[in-house]
Length: 138
Image (cartoon, rainbow, N blue to C red; front, top):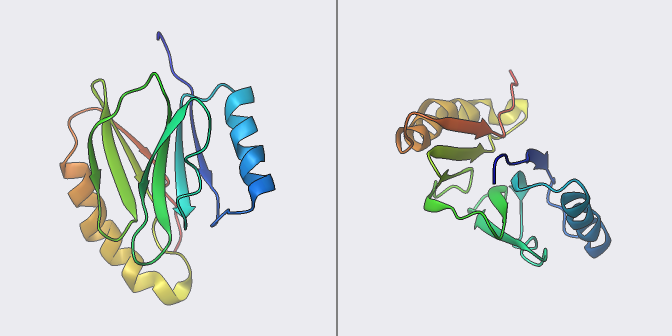
């Protein structure tokens, strides 16, 4: 595999079978090898033929996931207990997917996450990092 196609998507708790089928079809049509997913609320992404899903759904029910083509093997999958971040090693690259809280009422929680959670998950990685799921909000 000389190159890989990577995408990221916020599914906002997607659980309707028709929309899940549309997502699976998009992955297949676009030949996506690795998909970073945020705002996963249920383990509903595991039936995509030819793909594996690694979930991290915490108590907040706004988790993260990494979906990979069967031919891609992830190692050292690491998760924050909150569900807000998942990391895994692919070859020499660390794939990190995060999902911070949103909204003005959660600003303090978001600050704690960016000051504590993100540095922790990044510290588990090596020199080569692909970081997805970042939202820049005030």
